[in-house]
Length: 200
Image 1 (cartoon, one colour):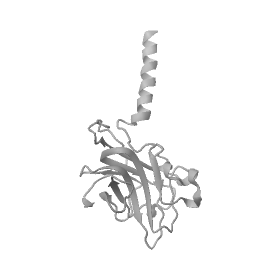
Image 2 (tube, rainbow, N blue to C red):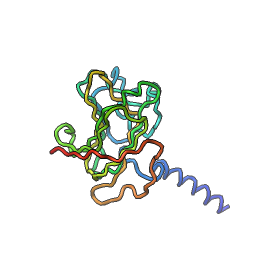
Image 3 (spheres, rainbow, N blue to C red):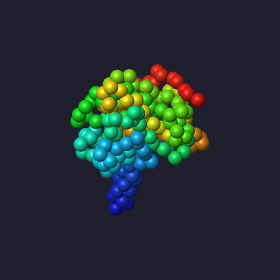
Image 4 (cartoon, helix red, strand yellow):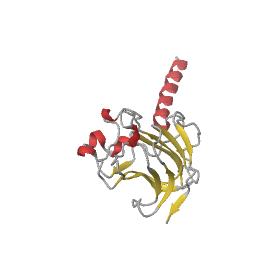
């Protein structure tokens, strides 16, 4: 009987830990406050900013699990507030796969300390051209910030910004280790950042 109870306890505990830590590392963006420049048709429940950090990796935007800005904003952006300062280790982006793959292109990942991402930020990564629908970006400069923004400048195509999930892994600046396990999603294309640029 004790063995059965221990087995049940182990399964429950394991499932609980997986819900928090995923596959071994804590996603510091999960369910944190997120905002974006605009929302398609003002339909927040279907295309709002929280769809990109709700823990769902569904990549079909028509199911209502992705963000979607309008197409005529001068710049498109999505921002998550971690609540505290973190040193960013990697960023995992899941884009929509049901349509319009060419829209997932020409964007930047910016790390910043204040909500003003336009004037003071550190550039973790800059995508030129179309990106894979699953991409893992390593911030090799150990950039620190309280916010992360996915930024996309408007171009002649007027492509909107659509994100199905953005996962961020890192360590709290206070010294508390947020993730010590190196096991993270590895199904996407991994890119080690070669663009190291900082604006002050």
